[in-house]
Image (cartoon, rainbow, N blue to C red; front, side):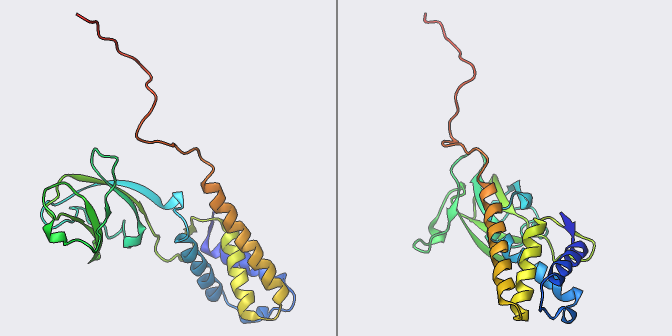
Length: 217
């Protein structure tokens, strides 16, 4: 990982190696914006583990929202990966438009949907649902500045920003195609790495490690 300033310098150095580019035309601010753009695009392409976190939040029992202010945690509804009721392995589903949500009764959470409340980007139905929910969310960083460390793969951002610049410059199509290929290949490699960890086929069950025998009378 590198700071934004370091990524800008490395991207500029990479572009200076490409013949024919109008290298005097770009500035640090422009390169920084290209790096930020590439980060924003890549952030939404996968559930990158460095931005994921589990939380346990309590429902307020009357309006369908949680009692915790989520302003700095969940900034966008689309960053919710999954929601479970407490003590359950069956996840909540998105509220379907084929039902009247106000007809839902009980206190067990069943569905969820987005909210315009910046501090609570989702709400649960029925609204009288109570207890805790377990939520896996993706936390989007604020726009990076200067000496802030960008928690993402250096090469993906540098190659992507270089490709963007060369495409705008338009003086070296061969180099543009080259860096596009390098960028896309690196992104595919990163996504492939996400699937390397072992995955449980059935997370609801596990082999017993001990046995208990009860004597018959």
